Length: 445
Image 1: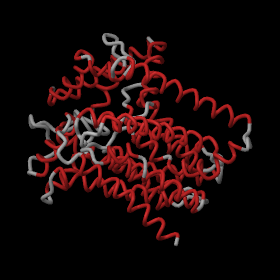
Image 2: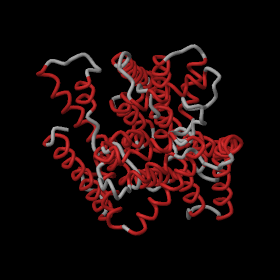
Image 3: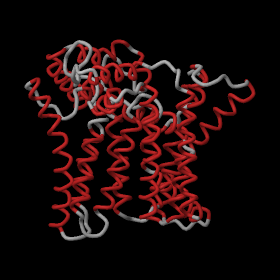
Image 4: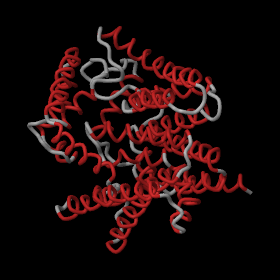
């Protein structure tokens, strides 16, 4: 009976994914999607991992997603095949979520996590876009699953090595996984449970798996350019955009709408072999500004963190862009309100679950991952969609919140520290959503 229920939930998740594939099948590609498709077609066509100008594809995005799409194009598929492959990856991701939650909290919480994931529409929407969300989220959840399994009890070095390799692959899809993995290695080494020698050996095994993957890419880049880079040079440009004194916006969308603020991205990408030097110059200027203007940097970072917590206006965006069949006037805005409410509830349940989860390695792994991703985007750039992989990663915590956290909250069986943590989460979400109303609704956004 339990197996049938899980199978039905996975089929439900697949049906939701396929509905978005069909809805977006004829949607025009945005700038990032078109860039990925162009680079992937060049790679599949035997032109190497290069940009249209023939230079190595290292000055815009990491190479992982281009290689993923190129493999599908090489096999004869098109953009629709990429969307379908990502839909399948999204369902596999939910299977990993179920396995992680079941091992930690039992089948009841795991089933609740799977149901929440199947109905979390922002993840389904972005999984069918030609963007990094689906492969990155899959690699992130797989890495978390392997890491949690490798640290359950005595260190299991095979699982830890596989976890490091998986995080390395995730970093080649979205570079923020690299600092996350380094922080997780430090967390494993500095933990208080078990023997110190075993902790250090486990952390070293995990780090070696990570560095082997990145060394392969870095070695290839060095052989082509004579320069050393971990994943790409894009991070230097976005670090500068997020801390540009000539375009002092703390809101991501305002910064990206300013041509002067976005110029570094285009300059680094167009610099060819000189892109490494240009990126290094922007990185030095940004770090210098951060060091000499800590208050302004903090304000910008707080604004960008609130950006990440803003619920996605999924139906509003797709309805306005005409990417789904036009909804009747009496249905459109209720759908928008429903989506906002669902996304707000997902974020709130993530916070509740992470606060109330019993102390464990999984809780520490999720907390470290959340903290590093938020800080990394806080000092560079952040979009509201960046919270989607975090919500999926925290679905195990959502399952715990639904099955154990809400009853404990209702019965007020919380410590003072837990009440204080929940107050901080509630204040952050309330500030974010209030700002969203002011910026998006009152200003016509």
